Image (cartoon, rainbow, N blue to C red; front, side, top):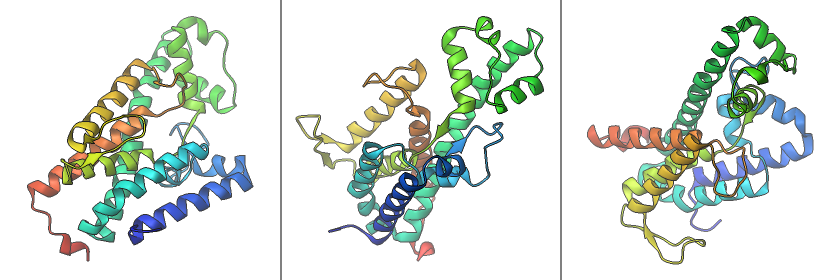
Length: 248
C-alpha cells in the first residue's frame, strides 16, 4: 500500500485476516471473539480486545479500514508506531467501556422492572443464559425497552469503529484545517467541522434509537465512546506537553 505507515498497514492486514478467517470458520469465531454482554455466560475477558478485529460484513470492514488508511498514517508519521498503537487500542477499549456501561444501565433498569413484578435477577439471568425468554416479560415494559433488553443480553459487538472514531478525532485535533472530500458530500469540509458533526449525529442516533439508513445493529454509543476517549487522550497529551520520544 502506498503512503501507508507500518503499524497502520499491519492493523489493516490483521483485520483482513480475522475477517477471512471468520468467513472460513463461521459462527465459532463469533462465539469466541465477538464481545458479549458481561453477564452473558459467553462473555470472555479477551473479547474487549478481540472484538476490535471482527467485522460483520464486507462493507463494515471496508469503511473501517478505509478510514484507518485515510487518517491513521498521518498520525503515525507524527507520533511513531508505539504511541499510535497505544492510542488506537485505548480508543477501542474506551468505546467498549462506554457502550457496555450504557447497555448495563439500560439492561438493569429493565431487570428492576421485572424484579418489581416478582422475578429475581438470578432467575432472569438464568433464563436468558439458557437462550430463552419469559413471554410475561414483554407485557411488563414498553415494546422498545423489551427489545433493547433482549438484544443487549443476546447480541454481540464487533468492529474497529470505536478505535477508528478516536483516530478521526485525533486527526481533527492535529490537522483541524485539513479539507475532507467525501463522496456523499459535494464540497470539501474542514476536519474541525466535519468530525464534531459526525460525532453529534452518532450521539443523536444513539439516544433516539434511529438510523440514517433505516437499519439497526449499529453501536452508536461505541462510536461516541471511541471519540470521547480519543478527545480526552489528545487533551491530556496537549495539556502535559507529552513527549513522543518516550515511545521510541
